[in-house]
Image (tube, rainbow, N blue to C red):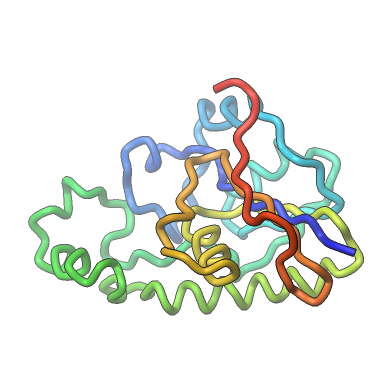
Length: 194
């Protein structure tokens, strides 16, 4: 018997509109972000997991108003360190940012996490979800772009950024109970008007 997993990126925050690195900052979703979520349809879930950040919890409550939301700390976004809250324009002449870009995003953010560290932490969180959800067939996770890219690139291979999703969008995939992918996976979804 397979389990269906749905990974959903939270609704837009002010920082998302301005293309800022919003990782560990607990930024609220905007009203427009909430409305965009309400216009879409999402797969049903037997159980819902969320990052501890309020933008994910709020998104979870809008999409799944009758489900209990289970918080998993390790599903939070990457710690962008000194780049937190800034955007490309503000960082374009910063030598640390230029060096990070030249590394292909592999180096650690100054004062923050490396991609490798963030992926490892995220996969520890996903392992907790796998264990806790073993009695459910439809599992949804509301998290961040980095969280989603980490999980999918580790499970299915391919380039980390190839799994980028916009706010409110996501992927579904099937896993057997022993953790093996079955069927065509992952499948992206975006339904409803927007």
